[in-house]
Length: 148
Image (tube, rainbow, N blue to C red; front, side, top):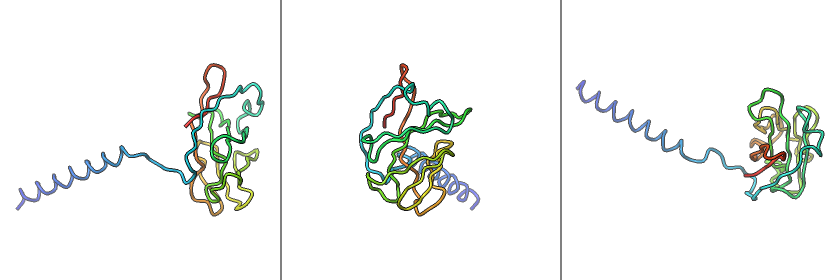
């Protein structure tokens, strides 16, 4: 009986770890915002806002609803963050969140608020439950490159 219990326990344990390993290989998150190819670079010297932690610059015509590039606070592992400006509750390219000076993006229609500080774009208030769609942002050859 003890031998059977041990074998059963080992089999259950192996199945558990295999299922965790298989699920760990799947893509972590799929945004409600439709995929739009993004490969955009610009000169940060033209935007003083990106020299100030908490500063943000918006670009229209990039991504699904526009692009927000945010300068995170000092000491962050990701000093530059890029988000699609489309609200994840409204899912409409013409309804774009705007960033206030405190690192919070606000939807003008549903009033959802998203925190940009720390890199998540997570909703902190309002009907939205999905975070803002995030893109990769990095310094490259004196420019900022944003891509998916």
